[in-house]
Length: 588
Ligand SMILES: [Zn+2]
Image (cartoon, rainbow, N blue to C red; front, top):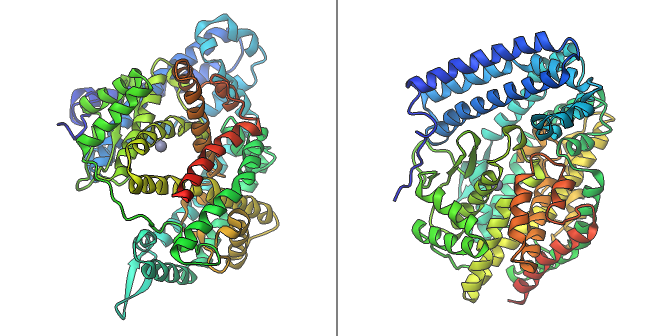
């Protein structure tokens, strides 16, 4: 059994001729593109031919860049200290950053092209890239002059980027004082956070208390970082002419406000059912006033299911096959061809991911497989991403980036296939264990994410009038949690500091990095419901949908599978599926 992935399909080594030649080649291409932009963006003569030339150049460059970066970053993910990979990673990125001015120049040129809509239909290449080109035009409206862009980029290095580094430093070195057997012990934050899953109730409570207490040392520093980053976002947003940071996020996600409103309306309507579940869990753990925050991840089922890799693989293959042979054949190819790096090892990074290699029409999946049922789910999840990538293989490399809300569709869909199948074979205790895992995720993705959305909205609103103190931020977080969780959580045991260690609030480039998660879950559940209604015809439409996520707005892509994401009813029907699981869990 092959359990290490193979990267030789990309390059033999960093020392080999092929790799070195490609590094030289990317330099030449960058130089060529710069010169091309200088010479060809002065006028709009021969617009069609020039656009075609540009598309071809940019495709070639993107493809080569993808291949080189894939080799360095995949190497680093299993061997973080690899010197050659670290070196080339930095070298290539630095070379690419030289193109910032060139991109700005070309974007301005395309943005100002009056004849664009006339030219697009006249060429196959341009028709294929119409969405890509129109996106440039749309974004162009928010791009400032070359000089202003340059100043913003440079100031951000010492602004939001620096603040974000500072915040990461505070959190990474943060120690929590915890009492263990009468002795005070200093523990890293990540270890303390993990104790939320501990099977002993007193340990969970002690960890929570110590964690909350510990933030007093760093709260003002973290608040300063949040104020600086959010303040910068507001300023830059205004300069670029966006109505708000939320508007900027929506525009960049190719999603409209109507869709977000419809989803949030359905989410609000569904909150009572989640609260019912939380109260039930509280009752079972012996609480009468709702669940304390520190019990959200408390395990209530003892059962552990063991799935060695071979068994997990076969379980997935069997059940993917019940969906389509396309899906199971893809999974088999990935498993048999050395596309998956399976087990944890020294120097390998944590977690799991799927990396698309459009250039060679393959993908690579990194796992840290550990024989639990959740590892089987992770494998199914990453194979879902891989299958999505396969559906995009026939598309131009400029048409393969999915907006964040759609990026998790195929992965969640594959998870659903496997979980459903597992539930069918499970005894009562296993059923309870699987449902517990599921519903815990639902609660995070629907209720907790909603509280994060409320928090971030309020922070942006108040930050307009000046910086917020740590006290104010805590107050806003508590209000957001009360509104989202209602009487599901014990109001005396909430978590006022959830803004400190969650990384998403500190990404100046991706604000509201929360609702896309809810979107992903509910959209995939809705798709699965459609599949159950029409098992014969759905898979074809589904594959077509997956192949179009990089060249359509979310609203238009969803139409491929007959979903109207602007309709509250669609979201309601997805939430109904979650409700069914919750009721089943409560009944058990
Ligand atoms: Zn994923």
